Image (cartoon, rainbow, N blue to C red; front, side):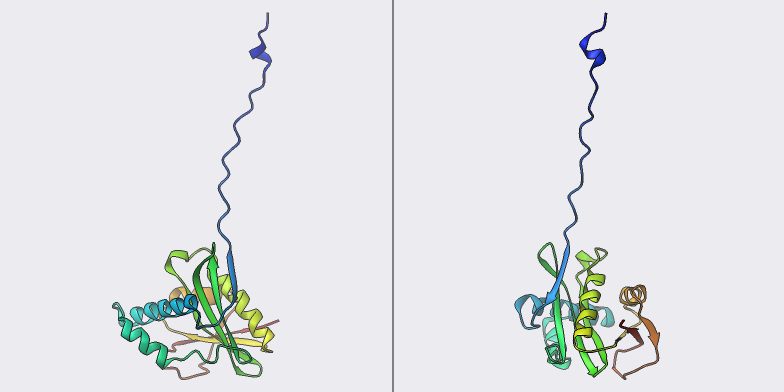
Length: 180
């Protein structure tokens, strides 16, 4: 004799599916908005702090903003973008024309809490599209030796080291990418 339970099939409980990771959104935004200003301040706090190997004061960040103005990061000469992860502003970057066919990347920053989540790639994609929209056929940038994560990001995305194209006080490596 067979019992009902011997013929019943066991249906396993559905496997728990992890929630999808929040997506990056990157869009043009004036560099003067509250979110953009906080991100630009965080950028200077990090790059100056790494250079000086110490915590940077608010007054020093204020001085960086004065010494390196962002006025060229507005149309028709440039663009500033803010990246948001799950709606939170955690990345920024700018593009500006150096000449009619050459754009320069600047202020590229991803908050430490969001590194490794694709924010750098998302920024580059949008900034390169902005460079194309400005008529550029190539993008250049300069960076420092201690910014190893930035140099690796650029190399992964098709930027090749080139001879110096400027004499910036902190420039140690120069990169270029042809836009197709």
